[in-house]
Length: 467
Ligand SMILES: Cc1cc2nc3c(=O)[nH]c(=O)nc-3n(C[C@H](O)[C@H](O)[C@H](O)COP(=O)(O)OP(=O)(O)OC[C@H]3O[C@@H](n4cnc5c(N)ncnc54)[C@H](O)[C@@H]3O)c2cc1C
Image (cartoon, rainbow, N blue to C red; front, side, top):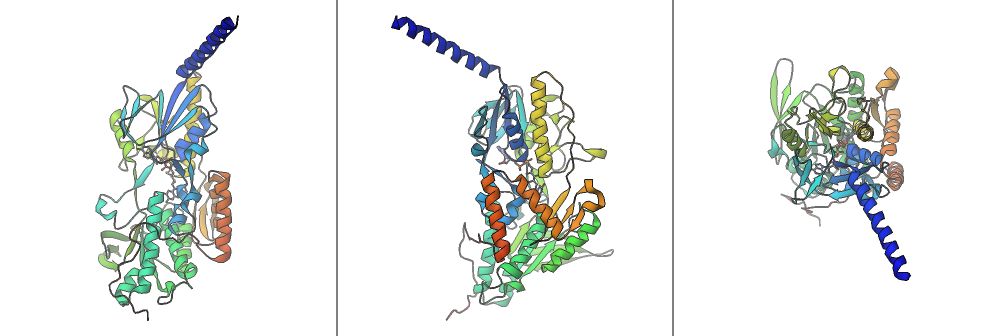
């Protein structure tokens, strides 16, 4: 009797297990490479659908909120404030698996992504959202001399270089060398360059003003070098001018129409364009930060090659109106890696809101396809641009508000704050960031001024006497 009951229960369990396996096998497999804004928002949206199985592959175990990286680079926030583990964000999505791995190749015939350790992941639909990195216009040898800002490691390296420069200036007796240490050059006056230069100006004139004994941090020179004729070239002219004035108020010297021609470990050579002429100039400095030019991620190039598509000059992959690659409806490219056409033939800009919208769109399009329906074309909704320049000032161009949306100063800064808090992933992060900001505004401080990484000690040529 007991034996019969046990056998019946066993059969029931086997049948249930089989049906779970069958259900699993019949699920549509979506593989997402890249857990940045585009990939993460796609995964979150797909997490609601039991008919879909999601695998998110990223070479980092965290999602990084890149727009606040410069705050880490300048000691206002800690790395943990702007990064959140992908597993934690997606832990409630039972249909989603997170894989720590670097995608290195695509085998389109087998519908398989190959990882650097030789592992493979098979897909029915593939989303590639591996973003972009900084580019040195073919001068990759400049990279170690002028770090760019893209990762947590970049941010802590830049923070180290800025703080080491002040420490070295404090110990250096030779006036020329001291001046070199106290000169900071930011190359590129797009939003990242403007934000970095503004923060450097503020550090010199405000944050560090009482911290040193041999030097006056306010004597530091901060130069913002831009090849075009104005800062924030994608903003309306009026806002560019306002941004320039706000930077100058923070003590930043803005050098437009000035192109970098060489970089070495003691300075930078530039070509300055005047009316009908060009002259060269040398700027001696120990700290050069790179905020010019972006290039699509290298995996994007491999995907394009495997699918037989030609990328644009920045390595971005062209996509159709449903964000799939021409001739490959099973491959979607999103975010900074994609060239999706918006209005008037213009490409969708490489900004976080565009990547988020594309991620959400891709998930909805996949769900429609799985249900046998055709997806609508992707439509980008432009939310505008905001850049912050030091404490309580900035510029905003909220285009759908027309001229009313063109703001400078405190209102723009307030808009920036609101947007960044809303999009920051995780309640704890939001709370910590708000508290840290409130504290640093009250105290004029940048609490995370830690020198980490190597070398800890600056190379001093002529150390001053301390007795
Ligand atoms: C310093 C800085 C400041 C910015 N400020 C702003 C701002 O104020 N406002 C704004 O709207 N936008 C800003 N941006 C741009 C914005 O961050 C990007 O447009 C956005 O991050 C693009 O999202 P994405 O998903 O395409 O790529 P990303 O967010 O870059 O994500 C790409 C992901 O792919 C992963 N990855 C890359 N290669 C591989 C691989 N081979 N295998 C596995 N994983 C891989 C990476 O680890 C990363 O997690 C800023 C960018 C930077 C760098």
